Image 1 (tube, one colour):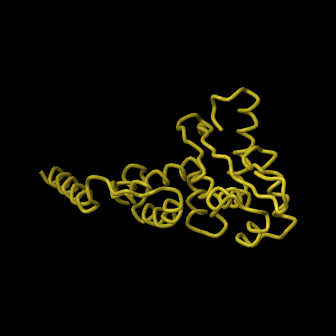
Image 2 (cartoon, helix red, strand yellow; image 1 turned 180 degrees about the horizontal axis):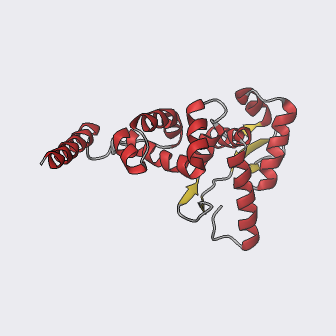
Length: 203
């Protein structure tokens, strides 16, 4: 799913993604099938504690949106998720972010995670996408919550909280390989930079 598709496909893609980003339960179902699939409706019902009618309704909606596909005609029918990678701009066009299965998964966890829900309320889906980028980098030892806080002009506490909340999402979608520099090196470099700034202010 990409913006290079035909115009009709792009419109369908945008509508599909809008539904996923606005309805956490729908996003949870997509994320579950993407992560665990192929899966049957019964498996999704049991894993996500969904009523039967709701589960079938969601599966039908996701199929119609083109982000879920049946891979067999035999009963029970199995479904697999279609990969999503769609670049969108914020309302004012100031930032572009990419909708991926990992972002949809994070949205799907809003109902069960107050920290992700509150952060998304404050910063929007684009802000959540940015936080996910930092969460991946944090797990690889490339940044600290202090660096994220400074870059995004948020409090270190808010950065630490959302990075912790997104950690399970990252580990469900990314094979985290440490970067060349260790986290200790990143922290040390940051401390040196802070000390240099303090020295400059004292001069």
